[in-house]
Each structure stands twice: as structure tokens, then as C-alpha cells.
Image (cartoon, rainbow, N blue to C red; front, side, top):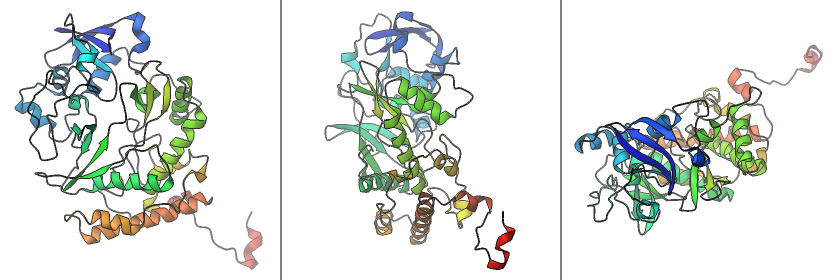
Length: 407
């Protein structure tokens, strides 16, 4: 076993012993710094092992599996160890015991890093700096992506899952929607031509964390406290954030806006790791919701467009509810989104037409689905119970002669 010190910046949190493949064999927490430990599942005794395993880049992400094999690494946790568990979303890392390494020497917010998985079609960087660490070892999600430093700006390049560029286009489309709404707390994505891949375009977004502000996922927040039986996960999450300094009156409108715009775009991947809070580096106080990010899995990507409203309203989601209708039921203020200020079909058509692999018929089908979704949203926003469409209830005008038979 290899002994390491888990740290938050230069504060020691635990001694961990790692196996050959990089997983945690055992650990000992320091009580005096318990408040600095990552938020974690309060019901688990081996939470740190689980947290470390989740921190490692998923083996299903892009071509990570082949890259690990080519480098003789035993797995994604081994890759994480080689890069000291460093991330561009928080300040946790590991240091070999008695190594003398300091946060200022290794953190990737201020020090250059090695981009070893460049998906832009360029050759990966030849290490020119020491140490040769990369944040890609802790990059989450299954989509092909990488951290990079582009024109002096730290940020992420995201690719796609197949030969189409639609997921990258959808990130740009979502950003356009938020701009039209005048909603500033979102991530801006810019298209990037990609070479040497089946798809033609990726997208780039600048880093929104820093040496002063880190990211905490809704998943880690929600599991950090035992949920009362009389409230749902959504209200449980809001309550915990309030305990950490983020007022409900600030968080709830953000979440409701996000639910409604995800509905318009048919976004189905707003799981609790795609919702996050920004936390102050020094006080640990929750500052604000993190900018909306990861909207690529929307607009019927990799799926057929439902051919009727009933099926359109059965779209499954990964979030605080398993369906879009379940999420809409959480919204209290329907006026937070202006249904008239959305991307025009012409904009979507021109955007998708950049990809020569996307057929015109597919583009038109998506646009038609989008327009129907906008209609459903507008009806719901005006107070219509669109659930009736799903369950087969139909409202008809009552014939005058039969009017008195209705309760």
C-alpha cells in the first residue's frame, strides 16, 4: 500500500492508503479538519472510498479506456493518482506522505498543466513543464472532452458521441436561449472545428471556478444530510443549501427557470451532477447557483422525435423527477421564462446545417418537435393542465341539452 495525505489546499484531512490500481484501501480522518472534508453521503462509512472512485474519470468517457491501456495504467483511479487527484472544480488533492509538496506548487488554477487528451485534432502537448499534471484525470461525464488552456484561458473542449455534432450545437443553442431571456447565470459555449474525429464540431467553454470559488454538486449536497420523510429530494436540496448560506429566494427561482428552459429544449440529462453550487474557498459558504452547464443531451439528440403530444410529454429525465411533467410540477412561478424570447427555427436550422452529416429531414423533424414543445410550454404557462394529454383526458364543449348531467 502507498500512503498519501488527502488535502484541501494545504490543510490535511486524512491519511489514505492506496492499492496498486489507485483505489483507497483504508483511510483515517483527522477530526480537527472534519469540516473541510468533501461533502459526502452521510449514511456511508466508506464514503471516502466512494468519493475517490467517483472522482476518477469514467472509463466510458471518450477513448479513456484505450488511453489507459496504451500508457500501462491499471485504471482510471491509477490515472487519478498519477495526477495527485487534482481538479479544476475544487481544491482537493493528494500528496505522498512527507513529500513536501505545497498547493501553490501543484494547483492547476494558477500553474500550467499538461493537456494529454486533446480532442481538437492537434497532437497532445509534449510535457514542457514540471510537474506534468493534468486535470483530465478527474473530469466527469461520458462525453468525449478535455481541459485545455486556449489563448491563455482555461476551459473545456467538448466533443460528441457519434458522427454528428448535435450535442455541441445544443450547448450553443441553450446559451442562445439564455441570452434571449436576459439570464446571465449560464455557461457560454463557442463552436470549435474538430479535425481527425467522425464529428465536425465541438465546443469550448471557459472555466467558471477559480482559486476563490469551487464547485459542489447537487448530488454531494443532497446526500450530505438525511432527508425527512415528509419532503421530496428537491425541497431537501433547497433546505440544505439554505443552511449553507444560499437563500431559498435566490436558489428556487434559478432552479425553476432551469426546469422550464430544459423543458423547452427537451433536456433530459439534468441529473444531480449537472446541477451545482459555487462555494467560497475560505468561508465554505454557498455563494450562488453555478452557471447552467451541460445542456448537450437535449433536442431529441440520439433519439426519435415523438410524433404526438402524448408521447412528447412522456420524455424521461434524470433529475429531481424522472419525467418532465414531474419537474414542471415543482415550479411555483411560471412567469420566470418568456415564451416569446426563444431561438427562432431559422437560427436552429442554420446552426444544425453547419454539420454536413445531418440530413435536412432530420433537422426539420427536430425543429418541428421544438415548435410543438414550445406550444405545449405556452399552454402550460397559461395554466392549462397538459397532464391531461398524457393520461388521455380530453376537454370538450358541453352540448347545451346535456349540460346538466355534469357534476
